[in-house]
Length: 576
Image (cartoon, rainbow, N blue to C red):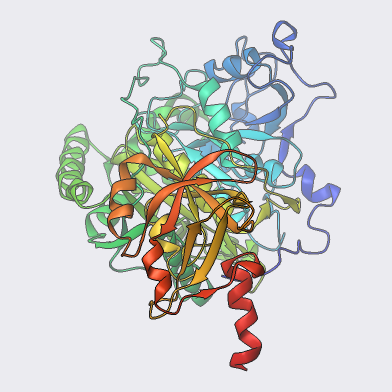
C-alpha cells in the first residue's frame, strides 16, 4: 500500500504538551552505577515508568495526589531494568488508578496524542506512550489490564508488547485488577521491546501471580493461518475500516491465510470486564484508601470503582464460571489458526469528544483488547499505517499464553513492511533483529534469475515459504541466459558454458527454510531444475539451471543484457 506521510500536527511536541506526559521527572536520571558498562544488556537506553510502578525514593501517585506514598524499594521490574544498565528518567501520567483506555482521566491533565494533540493518546498508560512516541526515552513501562499497554501504542504509531500474564513480576505495582494485570512495554521498534522483555522477565516467588509460562520456541510456519473476526465494528470510522482491510492484505502477502472466526465469545468476555462482578477486584485493590477518600477520586473512575461494592462473592463465582465457559468456546479457534489479527482500536476520538461521553467512547476503544488478559492470551500491538487524515492506525497480533516470541517475530516483519517511521520522530526503522527466544530453522540459499525475482510473477512461491531476500548478486562469467519460448509466465533458462564463453548474469539470493525447500523444488517444471551455481565472488549456491536440449526450440540468447529484469525492461518500448 502507499502510505500517507506522517506529519505531526503543528505544535504537537511543544513543551506544555510534553509536560502533561510526566508526573515526576527529576533533574538527574536514576541508574545503577554497577551496571553501567557497555556490556550490560540495556546499556545506553533511557526509560520511563508509569506512575503506578514503584521507584524507591520517588512518590507513587497512580495519578491521585491524595493516594501518594514514597516507596523504599523499587518494583521488581524496575530493579531488573536498572541492573541491566538502563537509566530511568522519570514517571509518567496515566488514567487514574489505571482505570481507562483514553488518557483523559487524570487530575494532572489529559495526555495528548503524539501526532495530533487534539486527539486522545489512549490510556491508561498515556504518558508512557507519549514519551516513547516523541523520542524522549527509548522505552517505557506501562501496565495492561484491559488494553492499556496496547491502545496507546496503536494510537501513537509505536509498539506495545503485552506479555503473557505473570511473565514479568508485578510486585511493586499498584494493582488495578491484580489477577489479570500485566506490566507492559512501549518502544518504537519490536526489537527494542523484545530486548527489554528479555531483561525484565522472570519468575518472582514474592508475586502471587508470577509464573513460568512455557514459551513457544519456533516461529510461526512460513504458511500460517491467522484469524480475523467475521464481524468487525469500527463505529462509523471508514478510514479505520479501510486501514484494517489493507492490514489483512499485508499479512496475506507475508504468507498468511485469513480464517474468519466467531468473535462473539471474545466480545462477551470483553463486556464482562466492567459490567459484572469483576469490577469488584478494582475496588479491592484500593479499598482502604477508597473508603476513606472516595471524593478524592475523579469521575468516572470513582463511579466505576464504587460499583465494585455492589457485588457478592456469589456474583464473582458466577462470572468466573461464565468466563471459563466463554473461554472454552473461544479457545476452539486455536485449532484453526496460529494467531489472531484485530485492530488495536476500532476508531480514534478527540479529547473533546472523549470528555463529553467518557464511558461509552472509552468502552468502544477496548472492543479488541478487553478480553485478552481475561482469557490468558499474549498480544503485540504494532504500527500498521497512517490514515489519510494523518492519524496512526495499529493492529494487534494475539496468541495463546507463551506465544510472545512468535508474535514478536511476526510483528517485527509486519512493522518493517509498513514503510512507517518511528513514532512521531520521523526516524526510519533500523534493521530487523532476530528474536533470540526462537530457534532459527535451518536455511538454504537459493539463487533465482527470472520469474521468481522480487516483483516478478512467481516471487510469491518464495515468500509463501518464509523465504527472505538476502541480496542481489551475479553469477561467475560462465553462464548464458536464454528466454524460453512458450512458457507461462515467461521464464529464462540459465546454462553453464565453457570458460570465457559466458557472461555475468544478475540474480537474487534468497534464504529459504530447509523444511519448505522440498515443496519449492517440486513445483519447478521441466526443462528447469535446481543445481549448483557459482557466483562472481567464488561462492556456490543452489539455483535455477536449464537442460541444454531446451535451447534447441528457438530459445533467444539474452546474455548480453546481463539479466532477466533488463530483458523484460527492453521489451516495453516494443510493446508500446
